[in-house]
Length: 48
Image (tube, rainbow, N blue to C red; front, side, top):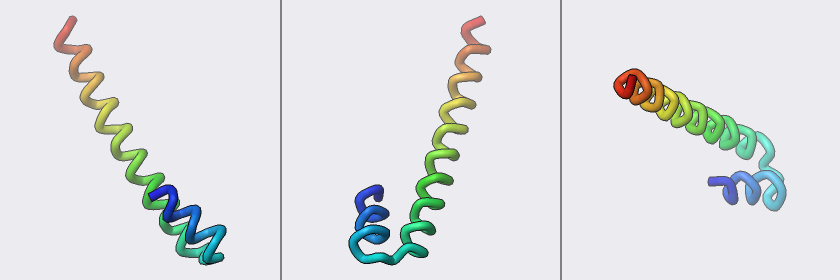
């Protein structure tokens, strides 16, 4: 996906599309981070 963002933005000069892909990547990373944080926090509660 990162290479698609690079190709769209710098090679094809489709800046709007590259920006939209960047937002999708940001949201996906945020969601995965929140899921990992929730699982880690739950694991720490169970260990105590």
